[in-house]
Length: 271
Image (cartoon, rainbow, N blue to C red; front, side, top):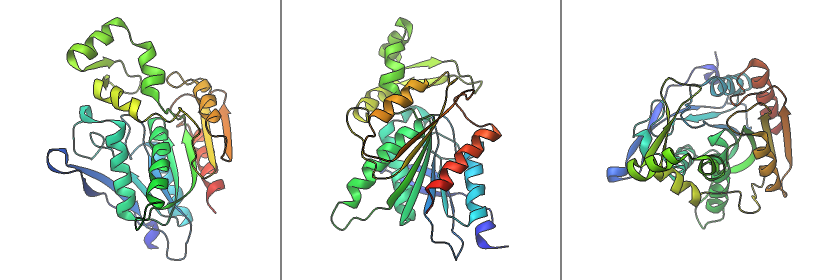
């Protein structure tokens, strides 16, 4: 059995200092010795982790093709330390960047699901900034696959739909709870998350990822309407963008046929 086919173990990276330090869990599958393709980077959605079906299948594809693959859990998720309620887009982006820079792949293809799509777009901006900085090299971004991407969801999808009760809870308690279709525990949205989201908006002008982008979007998505993907397209005019609508697809897009679409999209970007 080759090294690339051996299931890698999770490791931890300390991100932040002092009271802000947290242990971020990640799994790094090495490439086969004869492979020179890009490293696949998985970015999960809100309250999801690196053990989800799409992440596992992406890692399995990497093993079969000999590619390297990186998965991580944001703080407050999965195996990572830190409190979920302390999470913000800036904080989770910092963790994703820290893991990628720590492992230092030369080339990457990023696959982001839901909120992971927002973090992927911010990571593209951060990688571009670091690559252009003196003596500070970042990986070359060669492609992105965004699954039901939710950029700017705090401002575009949450804030306009807040009830008076939720507004009061945010003001008085600093958070509000919402029923989750995917867990027995409610979703928790904090004031810090919403305020930080305003500082991380990407749907404010042209987004230059510098690479091909493939978006997969279900048309029966109850969480991120398919019109949101169309809005994102308007902000990606300079890139080679493919948008695939899945007529009967939901938000998770975790059915076997959906995962096959994801893997096909990834393979089309691996050169």
